[in-house]
Length: 129
Image 1: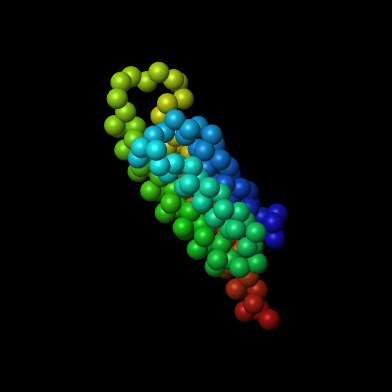
Image 2: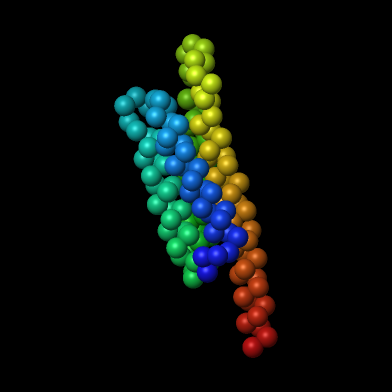
């Protein structure tokens, strides 16, 4: 069912890479290779698959775990990029990029908690039949 609380958490976790894509245009991590754009696209696709596989809760948890791993790698890469920036900070939005994957990790962890809660509820109802 799409109208569950975990869907809202997963939707927020999908919006985080969209905002990372928008704010990460100046993030030049590995030269001209668009790592941030590719990772953001992958995270949006994984999140959409996770939202629309609501009938298979195990797949949702697996896709959310993949999203958590990719977001954790993005946090590390973006922190590495921030630490290696030369010069001062010219724009006030510099340094906001690692916040979005961190927010997505928290949202995905909360979504996994609610998915597991639903799974326990379904198992307890099946025992009564």
